[in-house]
Image 1 (cartoon, one colour):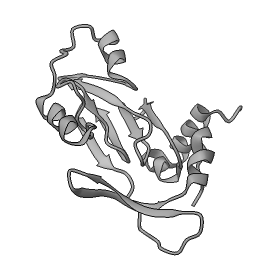
Image 2: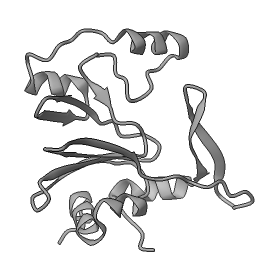
Image 3: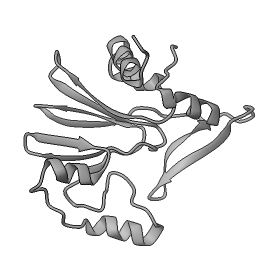
Image 4: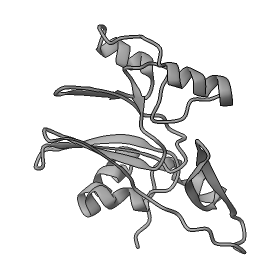
Length: 171
């Protein structure tokens, strides 16, 4: 055991299943194939620092950290531009998830996970943070998308830096 990011994530998944992300701090985007359940579990960090793009069509599902990787593994994937994503970019200077600039590729939103199985795709917000005022070394804030608060909480730069190693905390 070397305690690499991968080993830590796998140990956490073995111990807590899909709720493992509740214990992670920092930046991550990962996918785990669960052989027993025959489903793929995909998750992205709370702040959306690590990107996770995907393409789902019929019985196929592909994911990558960049759209160009999806085009490399799926050469026939359409490169048609998503008009709504372009509008978002022109209005705000960035494209919010689940959109990407390509109509055939979606982006998993921050603090979301997905279960992909023969039954389909289930997308879920995995954490809802509470704002706590008066805590030292933390900042309180909110993440907005399309004028709606999608995440509130206290954010710690210390936890963010430490967790780039894939650490998690027990309850």
